[in-house]
Image 1 (tube, rainbow, N blue to C red):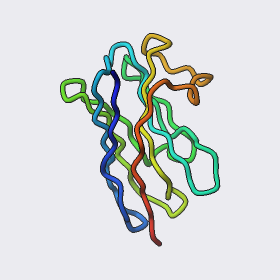
Image 2: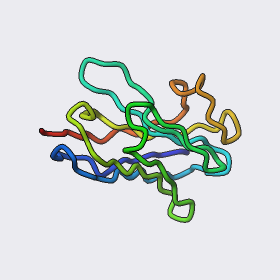
Image 3: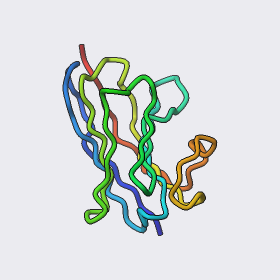
Length: 126
């Protein structure tokens, strides 16, 4: 059974650099696409970054150059390093995993990921 537990959220000042973590159990990184998504109040959930089984990454334009997704297979942990935070980055951040495409991360499946964590809230103050 897959379980995803996010941590690292909280209140951060603009320009800060927190790191989110996602402890993943039941996930085989060689067969799962992993990703970070976020949902701001009153808005739809959107992809932030995904990483496939080969380590290839894709970022939303809004975070490109500021956020970095990575994974530690030995620790079964997914990370999101967030730099140069802006107030518009305020959102609930979710970790997700999916094995349907053998570790690949096709964009058509972003909102069809099988497994989701409960999220960690990141609030940026200016």
